[in-house]
Image (cartoon, rainbow, N blue to C red; front, side, top):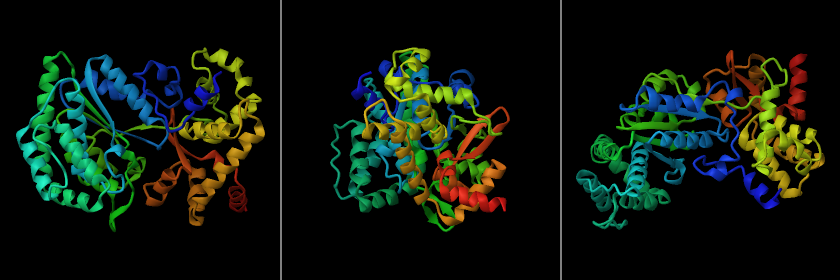
Length: 441
């Protein structure tokens, strides 16, 4: 085992790109315990059910549960079937606390044009260029857009200039939001339709755009009754749906519990429910240990140290990474099956000590994680947590959405459908035990 490579592979912020042979060595398929092949359903909708007509699919799950890795797996699968796939992380282009529909459309236009320009497919669209010139005038020449610049370059200069300047961003929004319909038409007719035609001419099956990280949009209120995600994906969802290519959007998980969920499903999803990526189960809903889930979580960590070994051989080498199997299982269990949290726990252990990781080091890291959870927990949320514990379900109330966003509660799937469990790290804390004792009285 090479310590530097192991440490780098455990970085919880790293997303596996399954188009990369090196990254594929670290991939663990959790579909058998996640309640179904969720990514295959997205792929099948595009390749088998509607290859020639645009689709709009929604993908969600807890932040850090592995959505980006699965979306990159979807990208690799679609490319293997001759689709041109544009994948981009929206958080790199957008301010997640201040996003408009026109911002999202511009980000899509830039990413698609940039990707196709790399394939020697170039755009000099008339009305879109005129729109950029209007924006340039509005911003009082604060942005240099030369006539010779590629379309993607012009859009990138606008978004880069305004992303970190609230005043310019507000000016841009005031200019573009009333013209969203025109912007949408320009993107469709002058970018997407032309792109589809050129791609088909070159033998490609079609164009797919995957917009990742939109689930990270701030839940802040823009009106007393409406949050920013509700405004974007529910009130304006029909506009985001009308792009003339296959679209896959990530959306915040708590929207699934909104009172307007059916409206979301119809306006943005076209009547189809979002695909949810649940946690990896560490136990069944009746409390019995989940042997298959735990076995796969062990492999998630051990493959970071021994990516080229078979699963059984990794277990044989366990003593190089942990002092005993119980230490490995302890990290897996307390993570609740949350991929990024589990990698984060191991990564933090490695920051303190070289492997093999002893139990006392793991316990110290777990206590720190538990302290962080308690700091974020408000006193009045305890009753909601115990209600979830009793019912293994969530209502659509805003308070319950907060439990999901704060990762106090995790979603799982089994043959009976969806169920919810309390974050195991939280259940071990003294305040939880004290509250549990009061509930029994």
